[in-house]
Image (cartoon, rainbow, N blue to C red; front, side, top):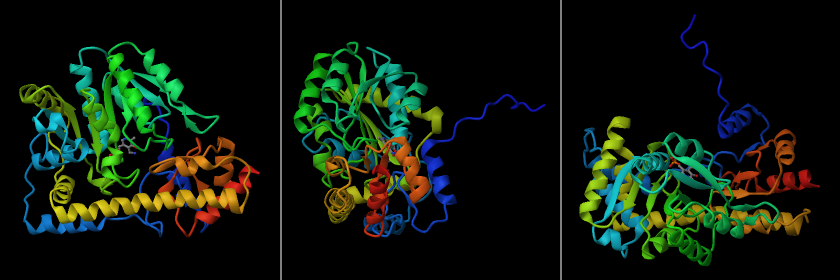
Length: 402
Ligand code: PMP
């Protein structure tokens, strides 16, 4: 008998399952709105011009393939921290941000989960929004934290449930950890307003909660790096100590290069050094040290004024293309087709995703009748839409809601 005879079959990944069904569909009109990866106006994966230039620059420097240090390329993490926290940030200017390179955003969250489980003194409980990126839940659980939920989405109005959110944070145990999507909330595409962030900062302070920001979309949401960092920078300016997971998957299109960073703001350089030492102790037995290629590319872009300026406009180009698709769907549904229902949320939501408000029966009908694939909660990846398919998409939505 086999040693593994009793291993049970696990459930398929909900998003990769959609890709399978999409691939098997032979209809030329088919659209995959499941996976969260940017597509250009022809529906093709997109490599940024600045990434190509940075790759050439890196290659011309004749870099070797030696190991990076445990916490990665120091030049990259310094630039990543500056991008997130901003030049004005007090912990940054006084040398009190402990930071490590990570295996993209997922790896940053995991290092953060492990670090908090070991060293955060006040609680082992982490609150995540309902709904949240699906991977948050197993990821924090496997890190040794207890995952609880705060209300976030008002299904009735396809809007932020701000009262529910405040009330759940106010009734959380003092000292609990709270995971906040820094911008472009996945899956809803709904973010708090700056005023709402200010109110949340007060509650977090009052309840002595510990804010852990997941920033997977800096620049990708609004097209503006600083604007998308508002929540993080506001919390830091208000004197909160924070943890931060950064990803360069979306804003540099470095998905498969696994480029990210995890950081914690500390009291002073001496405390930072102690935290850094513990990050190394967590990372070393997991994967020793991170991959170098993506970090070199990101560092080259962030560290060169001309490349940085061009990158900013490329990020804005991606964000703007998505924003224009939002307007287009809204206009077709509301004005051209007079589709029943209220569709304003598609235009006001932000980032890679939109929660359409379509229900599981409707999403199933879209897949079966119109070859349009999305997760059954009605979430669509906006990047999958373009001038060539947006009208077909809107007409298909119109047909299933009538
Ligand atoms: N957090 C959120 C909210 C995300 O949407 C994603 C990507 N889907 C990630 C983290 C991590 O992505 P990656 O590991 O590719 O950087």
